Length: 123
Image (cartoon, rainbow, N blue to C red; front, side, top):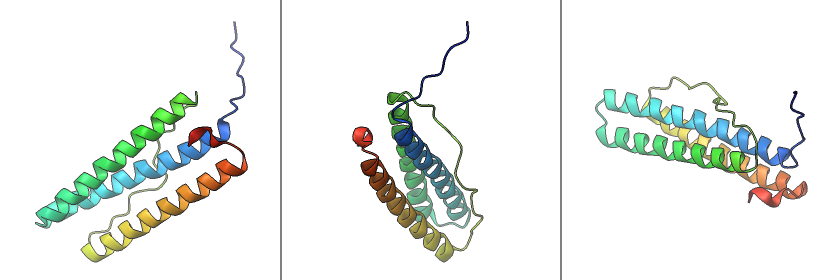
């Protein structure tokens, strides 16, 4: 017997959460890339900090995934961008700042879209 797919009333929220998930996964990978390069260059303190940040981003991915599953959606575990191969410390930090600002902007946009769609279920 074929299973009939029922539309999920939370699909807009699920889509927004999956978009955020892809960014968190990609950001985690980017910070891990920075971690290994700082370690290779002998910057032990910076390497440890980047590793800690990468792990924090992974936790964000887990929390977003939990919320998507709670809303009975499917989790998309694909990074939203390819890791940038940056090895200059100043450029690493510039890009890290861009990533964080982009995340803030993205979450603010998602909150606005969810509010406009009365999708406040994912707050």
